Amino acid sequence: MPSELDADLREVIRHLAQEPAPAGLAEAAMRRARCQRRVWTAVGAAAAVAVVGVATPAVVRSALPSSDGPPLAQAEDLPSVPVEGSPPVAVAGTPVHLAGAPSVKVREPGWTRPQLVVVAYSGGPDLAGAVVLDPETGEYLQYPFWSAVPSPDGTQMIVRAGLGTADDPARTGVLDVRTRTVRWIDGLTGQGSWSPDGQEILLVSRDQPYGTGFAIVDAATLTGTHVPFPFGGFDPVWTPDGDQFALTVAPDVVNPADPHRLKGVNFYDRTGQFVRAIPADVAVHAPSDFSPDGTSVALYNMFHKEVKIVDVATGDVRHVIVLTDHVFDSLGWIDDSHLLLRLSPGRLEPTYLAVVDLAGTVVETVTLPDQLSTAGLLWVRPAEGLGDQAAHLAF
Amino acid sequence: MGTDTDRDFAAFVAARSQKLFGIAMALTGHRHQAEDLLQTVLARAYRRWSRIRGEPEAYVRRALYHEQVSRWRSAMHRLELLTDRTPQVARAADTDRVDLGLALRAALRRLAPKHRAVLVLRYLEGLSDEEIAEMLGCRPGTVRSQVTRALQRLRQMCPDPIDLSVVRR
Image (cartoon, rainbow over all chains, first blue to last red; front, side, top):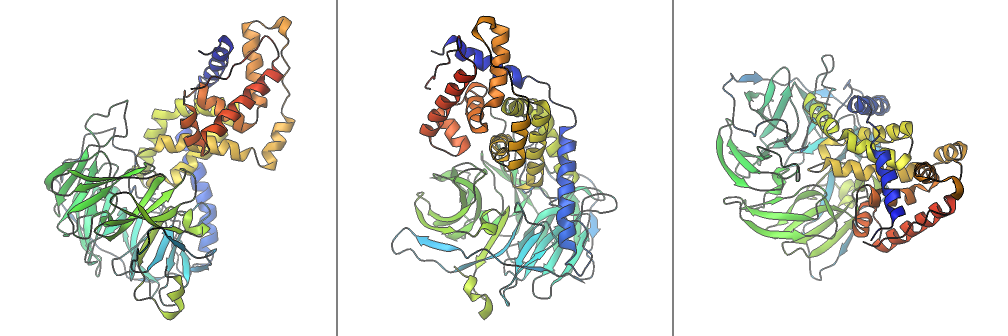
């Protein structure tokens, strides 16, 4: 039993914690974050040829589960609006030298896989922009974008910029990695999701001029149609067949005792019409979460220590991969029975890569150089097609 | 950032500000330092909002503890600690319960941040040694030794009748 003085200490600490919180905490924190961001941008913009403005991570790839509104339904009964991109403009990147190379440690004898390469990363603690690999020269180039999401063939990246204000609207663009040019679409935000064939991009909007909705944009022409849709905090991701998108949904009523519990994953067709739903208490984050055969999807919540492999058709949990470290991200499936995960020993610790099988066995770990281990987003692709000067980056 | 993100972030802070500020107050013992600590952590969370999946409160809480420990390692904050007003040591003869509370409060401010952190996690958040270890990224044995040292230090700064016991969970 605690002593009387033990209770005194508890009382003192609790009394301290009852000090009323100051007003305007959120606004002050956002101001502070934006001031820091402007400093970063000033550094990055000095090296840029094209005027690209202040970039911002405008998308919520996943965020606080909805607790302030109804669950997602389907496309609203509002008129669709055409969208159109701009001509390409040149943008220069600043070379970045990685502090080392990924180091592979095979832990399951006989395990082999195709070679991989990090093609983009963004969001590190000291990083002003997104860094993209030029697969010909082997150079990592830092651009003044908030993120860069590679196309399935790695030749293009969905990039984001803009503060989301009237004089600096949020913009999403497509960077041609080889020509180092970008085409912009104003008004659409979101990290973006490439269709499985790389021909289309699924983008969302949550603000003016379009309001809340999505657009499926032709990657070649950047034309498409905006469809009003009541999105919550999560972004939609393409399904493997390219005919639908999947969306994580929060409960209708949030349980105060378990406020982060999710309701499931809904599937919608390309017009935003509801198709079906599967139950799930964890989230789908990217198209790469779907297994190569399309029958399973890897669901997880950031910082949990497990990944659920769920039947896409029924929602049945096929496997629960229990890990000793926290899941920071899932980078995709190596094959139908192995996942490439980004793990972290602690929530603020640097990350590393791990290949795990569906039983939870870690068959391989990859130690990352500092810039990669602390990056917010990290994208890995098969190393095929690298130029001679980039071949040494494969691991 | 987009308005949607701002809205999500502002809603989160509005819903959790009292709890988070309470932790910051318990960690620092000083209103201005608590506000600065919390703003620092919230600004970082805001920049990474798109990456904080599922558990923003857990992220911010953990970041508060880590930030408090790490910032006090810097020379600047060590200087602040050294130049801060030294609290009076309580004397047994004039220590009633109010004085005891004041003395404890003052003594808490003089603890090393890591010692204070384990006490806050235990006495404010009610976490077990294992949970504290998970939160701080260390072993449960380390937590127990830190709690023991923290309480010993409090005893030194607040002599009898304070007789704080180490309670294993």
